[in-house]
Image 1 (tube, rainbow, N blue to C red):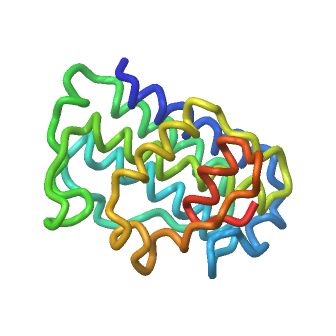
Image 2: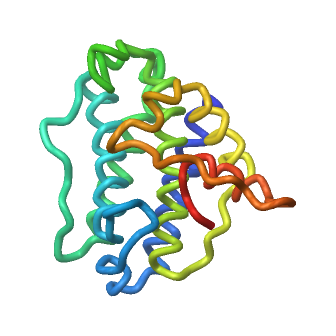
Length: 188
């Protein structure tokens, strides 16, 4: 198993854990992402799973993204299991994902895509936990990977509309998780 796949599985199960602790009211609350609710964070997480599953099985982007339904936890668990199963095949991480972020970014090995999507999901685990008012602690290795991954993007891409808000200056003595979240524009 690659390091990126381990990180992705860690992020997926962290989101899973938060969903299991969340009460239904959390989906209607305002989330830390500007203009998002818990439902939006959930749908983004589902989109993350759908993207990985589709690229792992077809090499292409999904035709659509999952929407919030009557039983969000059951839908998450089903797609989680399908996605992780799609990654559990010889050479899938060596396959090339064709333009997962558009032609401007190009194609990449599935292993790299899985690593990036782990870094995408990690702050949304925190977003959902904050929205649901449950334990917000993230795995330290995942936090380090997430910050390092997002720092590889040029500022104009990282801060473009629909991406991350402006960085927040961390308070003196902030821990690694707070620094990562602040870098990604979250007030902690």
